[in-house]
Length: 136
Image 1 (cartoon, rainbow, N blue to C red):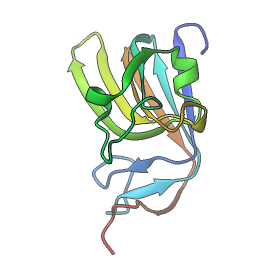
Image 2 (tube, rainbow, N blue to C red):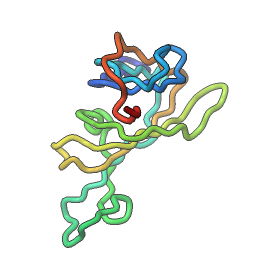
Image 3 (cartoon, rainbow, N blue to C red):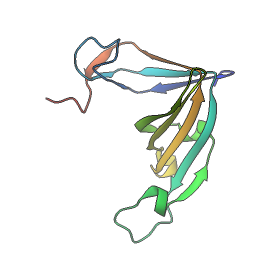
Image 4 (cartoon, helix red, strand yellow):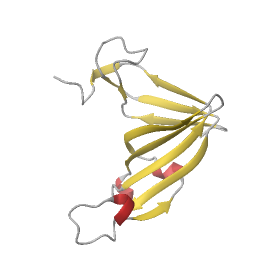
């Protein structure tokens, strides 16, 4: 966190084939990448703790787990983003939700954060392979 900017480093990110900076025609995986949120505000940072859930083969986090607000600086350490969704778009700002799996420190439980920001910058050096969901 640097002033009103938040920079997150990822082991890799998947860049869709229709992204303007992806001229391969395929969904691609990058090497290390960074996403910067300029003029950001954390709206929510939630962890669903399943450590006290017993006797269920299938756990639905939002129904079965205890919901905890935790600092985003803790939630996002070793966080694996599984889904990203734009919740609101306007001329002044964007609001985006990131869902995923928290670190082993938090029992690899499900969590999410909602970030409001003015601008997003996505940086990567190179594509290293096809994205995991690319056919063939």
